[in-house]
Length: 166
Image 1 (cartoon, rainbow, N blue to C red):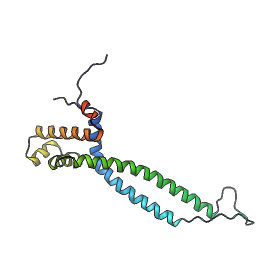
Image 2 (cartoon, one colour):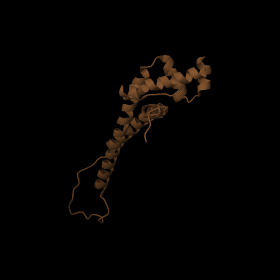
Image 3 (cartoon, rainbow, N blue to C red):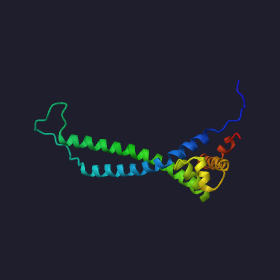
């Protein structure tokens, strides 16, 4: 039998917390992926494919590739790897852009709390000393900020599902 018990948080809050914890490493991954894609672009420029000419020259065995075929295979492999990385980069870039927008919507004091708690991984007690607030107030503010970010990231329908138990 299903009961209507209040719960501490919903999936939007959990996702938002996880996204905030992963955000710094995803920003770094976004940058690194672009560098990797640029490196593949340079490799693709170096791999030239000449037209295959089949004539009277004796070829190798059935499992051997000519140098032209090897170059073509390498170019195909690089192009496919580049395509995969671009798709992955687009997903990370899209997420980071949404998170940047959500964080930019916060006042500076709230951004500082997000920075300290989620990015720098400092506990409530230390943050309360830094911000000259009580630990309870600090905890409540971070919960409220997380709720606000969840609504910004997932839309207004997330607002109805966000509930905290005192």
